[in-house]
Image (cartoon, rainbow, N blue to C red; front, side):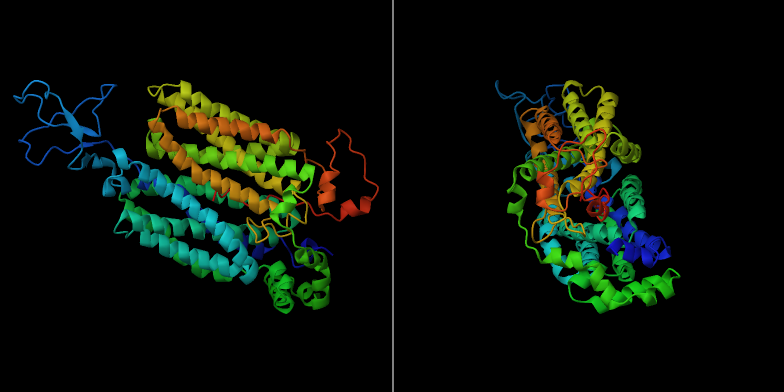
Length: 553
């Protein structure tokens, strides 16, 4: 009996599974809010220099920029109509007395700490630091979850996210705000890690994909919820508090989520694992089936996974053989390109000249058809074709933005929404594709985003976090020329799509269990011949997507 069969014996489609999915899914609503929060809390309103303190009453004329618009970072030294010596008429200077902002749409960290003109880089840096927190948290909390369990990390991450997010609402300075946002990203990595593992583990093989996609839609729903909250709460401090405080409740509710059975058995807590399984069986109305389970049976069912856990594989094993080396390189580039380009569009909503709240709703809504089309494409066209097409189309749409002038906001919005939908599809495809390409000895039976042994799944997620962390910094290159960021983002997406061309197809193929299986992988045939050891293939359990689209996070 495999572990999936063991879970099925206590009814893997009972009310307990739906309760766990709900308890794990509700916090994902808030995850989307935190990931995209700076779209609203760091919005830059129209602004101009304040006049000098000794300025006479009445309007102070503003210098005009190259396109005839008021210059936001310069002011006249003297009023243009002042009687001055020749050569000093129309002289300008930087804003020395601060800025005046259009506060009709609320405030933000930009208006709070004057993150405009020369200081506008700090706004992008704050988002980059937040993403760096998710990277560091994934590495640190991945190891801690292997040592202390998934549930303590999940509960602790909820509490840390609630405390640091709420604390950011009371930040006395920009430096304190950035530190607390780093802790928010750090804790979100722990939430993502434990949610993925616990959701996959407690579901039957057939129900796993449906519930995984279902939890992914919680994230999509969060993207709809955020603009509504931002519209109703225009003050950034109150908005920050509103999206963070609910995690105190999620921290309390998390105690209803049981610990990972696999982790308990692998950690020598088999008796406790047996009691949890029997409790789940009773909760699902299968008390008699639960009482039939024995400690010896539990250890026997997980014997293979216990032996795999004792094997020590490092990141060097990902590059030890030719085929696995190619798979690792191409997947890493695809993951980096997807995270890099996704956040270039997701965090650049205010650059398209359309209502910020409406556009964010559209950006969230495009995920619904994107995920559905991805499921169909992966099932009929294959994972390889789906990944290549989505990244190439995303790169092309971003590059097309270079040639569309700013006075055509509708067309620019269509291209951005299409590109974002393609990148959402790429994320969904990569989660499944990566779990199928890596062998069991490197892709652990309980898929984790990161692990102390730097498994294939862990390395892939580190790369996408690096991409999401780098994207805000690349946006600063727009000061050189407006087209430079889109050129970099679009070219990287095309490069990721090109790298995906060299990956093998996994549709209807047996999953590799060892590194040798990967090396023996041949290109798929229209009618694949059965392998000699058919009974060996029948024992392989196909993995479903390792988690929802948390960007993620």
